[in-house]
Amino acid sequence: MNFRKLTIALAGLAVASVSAAGAMAADTKLGVVVKIGGIPWFNAMEAGIDERAKELGVEAFMIGPTSADPALQVRAIEDLIARGVTAIGVVPNDSEALEPVLAKARSKGIKVITHESPEQKNIDWNFELTSAKEFGEAHAELLAKKSGGTGEYAVFVGSLTVPLHNAWADAAIAYLKKNYPGMNLVAERYGVAESVDDSRKTALDLMSAHPNLSGFLAFGSQGPIGAGRAIQERRKAGKIHVLGPLSPGQGMKLVKAGVISGGFMWNPKEAGKIFVTLADMLVQGKEVTAGMDIPGLGTVNPDFKTRNIAVNQLITINKDTVDKLAAMGL
Image (cartoon, rainbow, N blue to C red; front, side):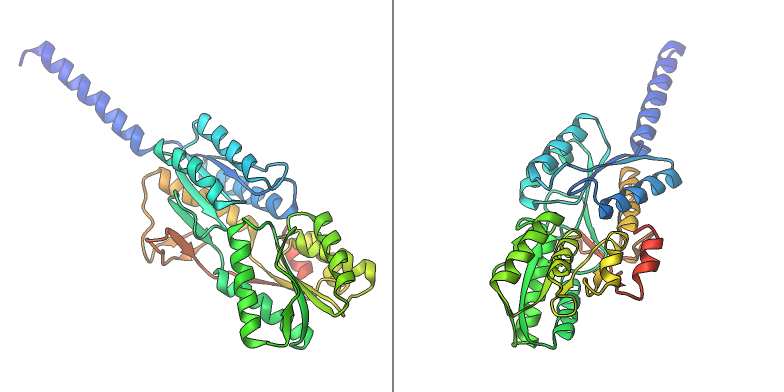
């Protein structure tokens, strides 16, 4: 080989090496699409996204649609694809509605991570900070204790298409049916728990229609707030119990007044951090493995078939804990 050909060959190898290095060390650019913007739960998640992005030196941001409409989430994900992000995170309102657009994202090499959607398809990973069964049953047992194991109750969810809310509801209803036959569900669940106003109005209507109502299980962070306000208006604190996950800072006064009897949650700020951590790992080509220690999740035991990573990080919300939780910015 003459000098000129050797120079060209070496130059080609150098370009290939640079390209390969660039492919292996892609920049992490993450967009997280949540159910709805402007509510305390997702404000806390956004704070976690921002904090972790600064720690890792990556670009990450949150998009909060103006309403809990699956079509708005689809549109936001389409926009992220067009903007050339390397990872997308989603807290779905409707898992099935998102499947085509998530498949499109993955076909373009974009990493896809979901939260609160354990049966989601077309993803790299979904993560949960509690199992659906444990979360639903914990709320059901607490309602039974507050109600003395008897009475009528109603169930609110964010919408009838939010997968995890309905899984919690399924677990709670099954648990009460098996263990507390004296507790009766008054009707099918109501998809109002992402709106304070809708939850309040529905709770008022149900109290009027069912004078023996003893409790609400409200799965969705605005559900306990709305139902709690209805209880307060009717002066039913201590007689009708409201239980569910909520943002402590938003519901603190209602909890301390005994209008909301309590509930369980996980830390949405930590969930925001985990979105960024997992996205950066995947974009950099790192695989999730059994026994791996992942910041925010701890030691994980992934389900490689369903692509789920689940840990148990339940936090109790009651009069004794709500001030401390609110002071944490939750």
